[in-house]
Image 1 (cartoon, rainbow, N blue to C red):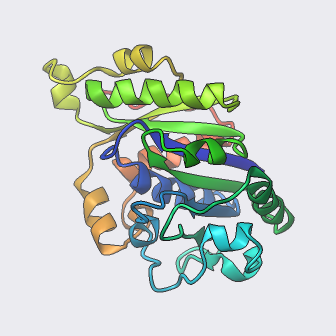
Image 2 (tube, rainbow, N blue to C red; image 1 turned 180 degrees about the vertical axis):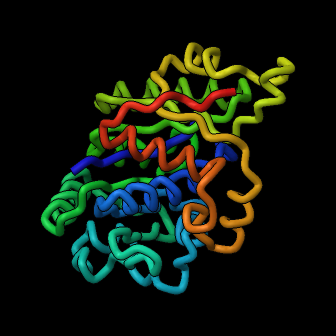
Length: 245
């Protein structure tokens, strides 16, 4: 089972939308996926996935033994291989041991992936999540401030023991890069000091779907949807070329 912590150096990178679409893309490939909202401050993953009316229990309830995972995890209405655990209203006081027990329960229940939507920046709970993660995806946009934040977050996670940290450059506007008004992908990789996992173009449908709780991948096959499907296939070990300009 892979446990992937999805993080970003600052807010506004589209991290949560990417988590939702990537979770669905992996489920489409036949993998059992548990998406976990670890951003206790924002708690938006359920809204993005259109599942706010299906949730009762948080990951903290499972980790602290209040309820078993099988009862707490809400199944996505469009794909039974995808389930969701929401975040508690406040940052919980949990030990690494308790999160490891949650991880063990997920593995026992047959999940292939846990995608953990972490908070933006470097809050204390990020180290807690990284302690159970097998790898991490850092999400950035091509803006210099975001890339700098991505580099800091990556170093923090690597120092915390996450062995594989890769970069997704999200909300890429090709025209801005061509006119020198945004960092190109090579510059983003160099500045963040991370290998590239994927490039996701700016796509208005991402915002529209997120605002309405719709699944981007069920509505279209091009643009950001195609990019997320390609990232999922790379996570599965398939080699695919990066997006062309």
